[in-house]
Length: 512
Image (tube, rainbow, N blue to C red; front, top):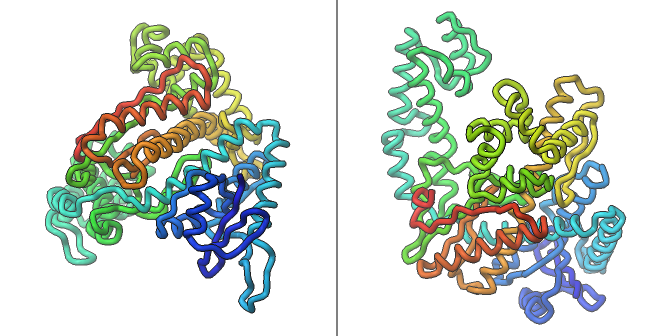
């Protein structure tokens, strides 16, 4: 059964069912969900679902019109804006009380048109899976924001004090940063603002060292006494700026960090966040992610995910065989690199990310000779990108069109590197989002809405579940089963193994 729901501009819910649209209560929607289990047609999950969650309503599945429009539009080669944050359908009633265009009928017409376009692609099976994965991802993103990442402000404060010293007055440097700034100035022999790239470049030039940037990788190659304190200053300054006391005050409430997740917020399909930097939690702060009393964090990450995705996508016999091992790089090394794991890793990562010169050149030649199907997939994608063409992931997410009308050779090469990795990184995102959707359903079926086991964090190839202590082993089983099901869903019967390193611990740091 197909039903539609949305919110009017003033936040009141409407429901379309049995051919009619009417104002509804949250109880009406909950009753339909319980009795019919429909695939809800929703203009924007990001706008509608938080209100449902606040009213205690959970939806099992849906079709997000905004996400679907983005996916279909890109597949058809049309530039499409990101999924709308606001509900694009009209209000059920105008301000004067007159009946306006029927928003439920409009939503169902949009859905029907999208289904026709989906069939016209000739890839309705795979692309339909992608539409479903993004839609359930949109539901989960709202639920993850609601649950929040368990976070200890006390531990965070202690970690900041250990690294930076006492909390400074507003606008002042923390004590450790001030010490390092003074050490840097003393080493150069004159005042230098370490936060100013221009001043640093000038200071190095006076020392006879010409630099293009003051980035870490370039500084690390220098032999100069200022390098060590300057690199430490940069690391601690980022901690202070990105996750310092101001961040803690703004983002952590009642023992929870609640970022706003943006499913498919990156063109490859990876998730993003609006504010808070949830996908860049620094290692030194992972001890602040602490499970509630009587509970544990189950953290699982997929080992060597993108290389295994390449093997499964390309169906290269040799690479699939290597991807069936616990350590894929070691298996490649034993088969093609005389046991030199480092060379195998450099070569394969270089092939996927377009680093085809320097130390990656010789390993790349070996890979091309031993695993031709896998390398051909990557090189075809790179060639298509360089020529201004579009490439697609396994399920059909499509790369954005070339932005330059007359690109330079350097821009063409850069786009080739992007499309080379797009097909692999985007498919990895599809596998991970499929895992999330399957895991969301299995945890709810096993433990219900009570909070005994909830997905609270996800990034790229890692998922975190906050659960009751006695459920930790069972939750690991659910995650492993979800990974296996996601693999079958995307790749069918394959010898590629997507192994998970799953651990239960009291803190995020201990889980690593």
